[in-house]
Image 1: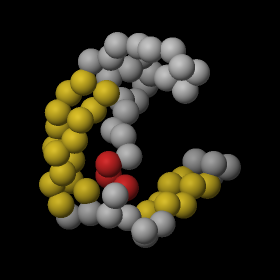
Image 2: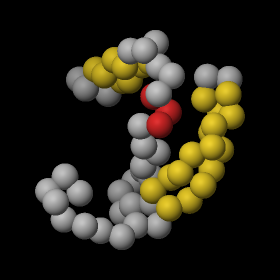
Image 3: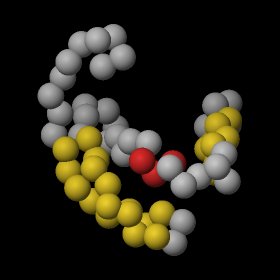
Image 4: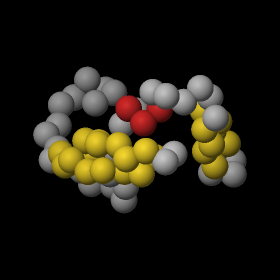
Length: 60
C-alpha cells in the first residue's frame, strides 16, 4: 500500500475490449465498489486527461 503496509487481495484474469482491441488483464479485487485494473491499459496511450471536478477521464 502507499503507506508501506501490506495486504493480501484476490486477483482474477479477464478480457477487456479497449479501443477496438481485446486485452488480457489482471484485476485486483478489493473491499471498495470498483476492482482495480492497473495502469497496463495506458501503455499505448499518449495523453491522459483527468477532470476531477466533473469526474471525467479521457485518453488520446
